[in-house]
Structures are given as structure tokens and as C-alpha cells.
Amino acid sequence: MEKRIGKKEKWLALLCSAMVLICLLIGCGLRIDKPGQSDNDTAEKKDSDSLAAENYITVGFSQLGAESDWRSANTESMLGTFTKENGYDLEYKNGQQKQSNQITAIRMFIQQEVDYILLAPATEDGWDSVLGEAREAGIPVILVDRMVNTSDKNLYSCWVGSDFELESKKVTAWIKAYTESKNIDPADLHIVNIQGSIGSTAQLGRSRGLANAARDNGWDLMAEVSGDFTETKAREVMEALLKRFDNINVVYCENDNEAIGAISALESAGKKVGSDIANGEIMVVSFDGVNEKALAYAREGKIACIAECNPLHGPRVEALIEAIERGETPDKFNYVDEKIYSYIDDISQITVDDVTYDVEKP
Ligand code: GZL
Image 1 (cartoon, helix red, strand yellow):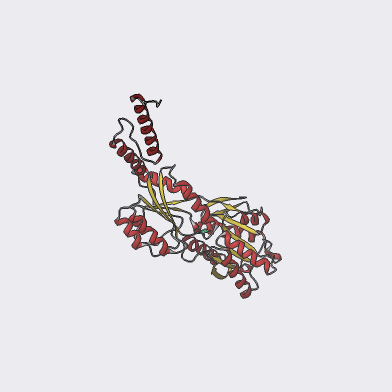
Image 2: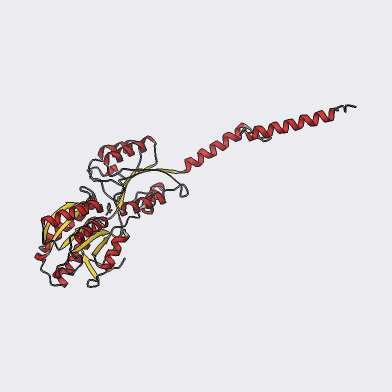
């Protein structure tokens, strides 16, 4: 006998079908409002998301490039500081050594209406127009590392970086102290300068410091040629200088990557790199103290002296932003304290502008 399906069974079947349908709909991503949940709740969640986004300080960072270990360490410090966890929404653009790329990036940051623009300028000239646009847009600009050359200091809020001429004065004071301790006649110092990127603040300061010291001490500064802060270019420049001069005994490199390139060229040419100038060695000095190979060369005495140039500007820039956020006006120029390094024990201290610095081992 066919079993009749009663009302109860029908309702049960209907209920099961409905449950299956609901499960299928949820599985398809269709949101089924919980009882009491209204569109307003959804809107509130969206608002809270956007509110959270609004709580970030938005920062546009235009980095000049990736030419050296110093630059990589500087970029790492900046990107490691301006994170969501720290309350920042960072837009990062690398200029690949081209000012035009940096100007494009700044204009993009202005369009995005960021809260702050951070600029590590490749060279000093040519920024007035785009920094004027940032000021028009009411966006504070903080300069990092190198400086811009402008008569209108109100185009940027503040700057943090190194005193590059002081770095040079430390290195040249060390050269003077060391060579005098070895009774080497200043006129017997035949120096070549492998410069950094021409027009950059670091190059201008380090080249000026050497030129002034050579003039004041009677050293023979024979040539200044840019190695663009890179190992490859510095090697080429050193090879060319060895063809021009047969009496080079001091190679002044404006960063560690250049010193590595120069040493490669010197040793390939059969030269002995070291501080014993009186016995024909060629002394190399440098700047930064970031590159591990350069520090190893310093330990070996192949790099006689390195002026520290500290790249870790991320926390320093953040402190400036925090001050501005508190309504304070930070100092316009914020210089980093830096050391001087050597593994040659003859000189334990140097004095520059009446300040005495211990010569340290990095
Ligand atoms: C110095 C910085 C220089 C470094 C180089 O603050 O601008 O640029 O000394 C780098 O290594 O390329």
C-alpha cells in the first residue's frame, strides 16, 4: 500500500529544502543578514574601514635611486619605519637616479593628496617649481639626506642628513695627522679624488673639504673625476687615472662602493694598496662605513680611513613628522652625529674645528 505523505512530512521536506537553499546561497557569497542586522550595520562597517584608513598618516617618499649600499640601507630604514603597523600609509617611488622621475613622483603624491612628501633629492638644483606645487597644495615636504639648492627655504619644512664637509674635514685631518706622523712631506702627497654624483650635496661637501685641505696643507691634488658613487664607474675612473699619472699615492673615494672599485683597479694594475706611502703603497680613504667589503678592507688596512655616513634616517624623519603632528616646528636643519673609522692605530684622535673625535674601529 502506498504510504501517504502527511502534512508533517511535507513541512519537514520544505524546511530541509529551505535550509539547503540558504546554505547554497551563503556558499555563493551572498550575505544573509543576521536577525536585527540592517543595511546601516553594513554601512557602519564600511565607515569603520574607511575611518581606519583615514587614521593613517599618508606619506609619499621619493627616493633618488639604488646606486650604493648606503642608498639601499637608507631605503630599508625608510620603508621599515613608514609601515601600516606604525600608523603610516606609504607610497614609495624610486627615481632610478633621474630627477625627472622624482618630479613625476612628487606630482603624483600631490594628486593623491598625501599628508607628507619625503624627498631624497639626487642633485641640488631644479626643485623650486615642483616644491612650489607641493606648497600650493598645502603638503609639507621633508628633505632626506641630500639638500636642494633654493633661495626660498620655505619650500620645505625641514631636512635631516649629514654634514658632508665635516665628514671630509675628518678624513683630511686623519690624512694630515698620519702623514705627519710618518714625516712625509705634504708636497709628496699626490692625490686623486674619485668624486660622487656631480651636483649632489654629498659630492659637493666631500670635494670641497678635500680641495680646501689640499690648498691649506700644500698637498698635490692632481685630478677630480666622478665615479658616480658606484663600484663599476670608479673602477673605470681609477684605470684611466693610472694611465694619466704614475705617481698617485692617495686615492680619495667619496663612498665605499667607489673605494672597492678603485682597489680592484689598483690591484689589477699590480699596485700595493696600503698606508705605507713612503714605501710605494697607495693609500685609499673613503666615506659611508656601510658596505661589509669596505669594512673588511679597512680591517686589512686596504682602506686607511672611513668617515661614517649614517643612512638610518627612517626614525629621524618619523620624529620630525611626529613633531609637526603635535603642532611643533622642528629645526630646519637636523644633522646626524657621525664617527671616523680606522684600523691603523697610529692615530687615536683627530681634531676638527676645535672638536676632538676618537678614531674608532667599526
Ligand atoms: C650620503 C649619500 C651618498 C652616500 C653614497 O648621505 O647621499 O649617496 O655617501 C650614496 O654612498 O650613494
